Length: 148
Image 1 (cartoon, rainbow, N blue to C red):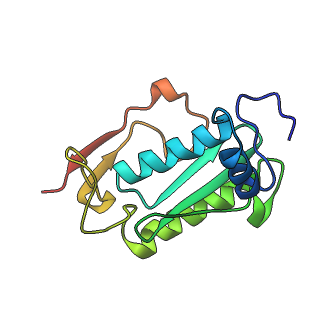
Image 2 (cartoon, one colour; image 1 turned 180 degrees about the horizontal axis):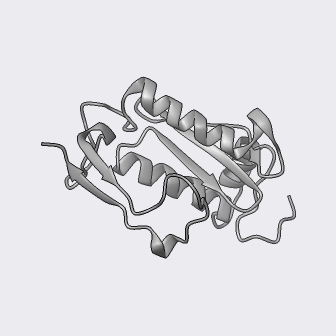
């Protein structure tokens, strides 16, 4: 596990979390990070969350009223279906097929949360569709407006 990053990512996060959580003493960085993620996901009524550093990415999913599942690590050195890109594609697929990123489609998040659907907006951009594909971020002018 010896990582020089602030949050080390073990190969077996469940085992590491449970052993650290049940040990006497102060909560470790891993226990704090997972607990904080669960708290944020619960407060914001989110179904899927992620925890990562420069080494690995873990996906988390709330199940039932208080269940919490975690994926095996998606290491940034891996490719194909075991890569973090595959994990992020999975999240997008879940949102599209389930129709909601929230834990309960009826409860759309805390007050002030807005659900935006891409098809409700017209997207305009100042980039060229053909030609130069390298565009500096500060040159992009992206606007979203409601369809009428």
